[in-house]
Length: 269
Image (tube, rainbow, N blue to C red; front, side, top):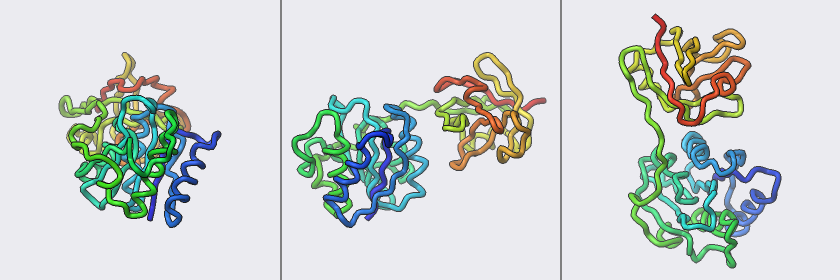
């Protein structure tokens, strides 16, 4: 009876606590796991990546996520069933949920919950987390069928994020893009273990990183301590995504990479 909860609400205000109260009030047996409420405000893509990375390590259940800059507008409120593990995702239809759903085989059933009979009345125009998403999550964790909490919608009509794609240009050169940076200043790229293998990048290799008209030296290392303090490194993060870091520093500050910035990783000859 798990509900995981991720949002950009922060902890300064009462928003997170109120959503907890709504869920437990309607489903007293539910256990709520806070994934994070530190997603940068309104940053749907950051939230989508956090959700995609975190949910494989969360128990299967109802997964509530709220990063909703268009709250009260025309965007839909939705609940989704994934193909694997009977996972249910609840949140705004703005691209936030689909990367996580795809980690579990994609969406096999979707409903619009904007007028769900489980929502709280009157519905606030600016706090759907409390009035729509939390009560629907509570109904689902109590065992209400997905089809009973909203109106069916085609899964192929759900909003998808437009994310860049890494590619191998030729042996020894990988073209990648900066997706997000974390609180340590590590820059997560859109390239995976398979991409670096295809490009022929080997652990320990000396690299050139071309970004924004500047070329920097880096080393492909296993972890931060494998390079000297202040040195730039390429590594595989906990999700097996490629990332750039500076040991005891910030790759984001060092490289000044804008979101989706293009960079080339080349083996030094």
